[in-house]
Structures are given as C-alpha cells and as structure tokens.
Amino acid sequence: MTLTRTASTFAPPVMEARRWIAGVTFPPERPLINVSQAAPVAAPPPQMRAAMAAFLEETETHLYGPDLGLPALRARIAADWSQAYGGQIGPEQVAVTAGCNQAFCAVMAALTTEGDEVILPTPWYFNHKMWLDISGVKAVPLGTGANLLPDPEEAAALITGRTRAIVLVSPNNPTGAEYPPELIAAFRDLARARGLKLVVDETYRDFHSRPGAPHDLFTDPDWADVLVHLYSFSKAYRLTGHRTGAIVASEALLAEVEKFHDAVVICAPTLGQRAALWGMENLSQWLAGERAEILARRAAILSAKETLATKGWILHEAGAYFAYLTHPETGTSSADLAPRLVRERGVLMLPGTMFMPEGDPLGAAQMRVAFANLDVPGIQAFVERMTA
Image (cartoon, rainbow, N blue to C red; front, side):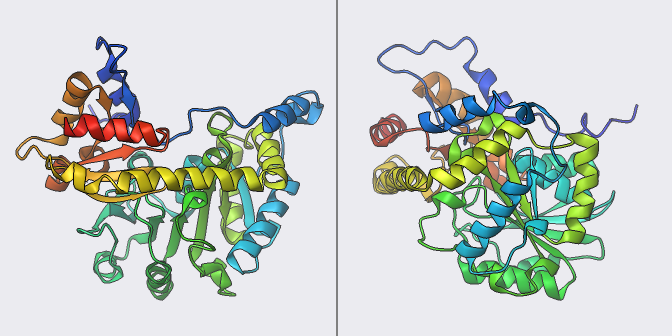
C-alpha cells in the first residue's frame, strides 16, 4: 500500500515531546522546566487585550477579509519595513498570513512543484521540512559546521536544475545563530545569479541582538526579483493563538500566494490582524522592553557556558529564543537522552535529531533549548540541573 504524503512525514516534534511528560511526577521542590517550545506562554499585554475586546464588538471583526490581508495592516507593514530596512516596499508587496508557518507553506506552494528541491541549512526548522515532505518537494540539507553558519559556496555546489529556493532563518530556529548581514547578502547574490528565490524567515527579528536592521537586502532597488521575506507577529505581541504572519515579496509571487490563501484559509484571522496593527501603532516601547528582557536572558545563558562545560555540555550558540548544545553522553543519542532528562532532571527539551536529516550523527549529539520563557533565575535553575 502506498503511503500518503502525511503518513510518510514525521509526527509533530513538540507534540511528541509532550508525551514524555505523561505519568511523570514532578515534586514541588523540583517542578518541570519546559524549554521545548519557542512560543510565549503569557497573554498579550493588558492594553492590547482591551483593544481586542473592543474589536470584538465590531461586526467587521467577525467577517471574511481580503485574501491578502487588511489594507491598513499591509500599508503599515510596508511603511514600517521601508523605514526599518532603508528600502522601498509598497503595500501591494505585502501579504498577511495565518501565522508565519502558513506564510512558508504559501510561498513554497507558489514556488515549487512535485520533485523540485529547496535548500535548507541544518539544523533546520522542522516545520519547514515537514511541509516540503508533504508537498513532495525535496529538502536538500546544507550543513552549517561548528559556527552554525551556512556557507554560500557549499550551497552553490548543491544547486541543481530542480532547485527553486534557498531558505535562511535568522535569528535561527533551532540554533539561535544570527547570520551576519554580509552572509545574507552573499546568499542573495548566489540566488540571483542562479535564478532562485532567497526566502529569509525573520520570525525572531524583534529579538536580534544587533541594533538597527539585521541586513540591507531591501536597499537593493530590485529586491523583489529575488527576495521573499517572512515574519511573525506571534512572538512580538504574544499572538500565537491568533495566527498572524506576513510575506513581503513581489506582486507576481503574491498573486500566486493569493490562490493558496483562498483555497486554504481564505484570509488570516481578522482579530489577530487588527491586534497586530494596533500593536504596531501603540506598543513600540513595550516591544523594546520585551526585546531587552530576551537579550538579558540570552546573556544569562551565554554566561553559563563555562559552568555547563564542567559537566561536558558544549554551548555552541544562543540568540533570540534559543540555545544549542552538544550533550556530554558520548554514544547516547539525544533522542534517547531527552526523555531521560524529563525523568531524571525534570527538564523537557528537544533532541537534535528533530532538526537534522535521519541518521545524521550531529543530530544525535545535539539538543535545543528554548529558553525565552525562563527568567534569569529560571535559567540559573536550568543550568544547575544540567550540571548537578
């Protein structure tokens, strides 16, 4: 019997990890430390919730909206991105999506057909790999080495006649690595030279440690010929349940994306869109405070590098919501170690095997820590458990 596309795709990793908690008792003096999922666990700020409550009293909040998003939100994204990146972006080059995952799915549907190839640096974001598998598109792994940065020359060697795009995620999920502007530009040049699209997922852009724009791709007057930019409002404004993301790309590509939207979601949820617009208009100082707190947490986990090393943990990188580690148990796969850590240390984190091609030895040696929901004392407690 032939397997369907979903049957031949791996199960959602975060849901699998949650099953490791079943039947495990965590005593009050050692509660579970959950660093498995990169999503805010708090509600949006009170002032945003109040605005959302008011929106619920308005009829338009409950109706279908335009496939590519509310015009006011598209215009605000275009204006803010133009200012932030020093480029020229029009509202017609913006689409609002039901989260950034759906943005990726829509873009891949518009760029690829069955049997095509897309280059993904490894460790990769597992949902990107899942969607390519479901679509019948080959994910071509691009190793990143010890510094967790992809190499454009190595990527060039992987390009074939079926390659349609190169995908970069920066700050990276799962590693936390922030790609230097010149590296992102080199990938843009490679993609342009080879007739490909460069898809840059900046879900965690608001928590980049570098001040100012993280790259200058939008300053290129012909950026729309090669660049596809993805973004999420979920992390910035804690809107994960309201599914609001964005694509910035050429009008021609968004015309294809519109077909995907109309067939799958019709439009992104209107309440989330209105909340995102309200946040952009009113919460710049609040968001700056959120960024400062995440950077403080990043500094806390980076400062524990030597302490972790005393017990054999190697901290490779930390950024945005993530830290990426090599574990100390040589000969033990991270896939086996991760459930043990739940039982023996009361810590839930994801194994590197969930972010790498099957059988890759680096995946078996590595683990991801999503530390953004731990405050600084919580990070210290996590480090103590890892080194106990």
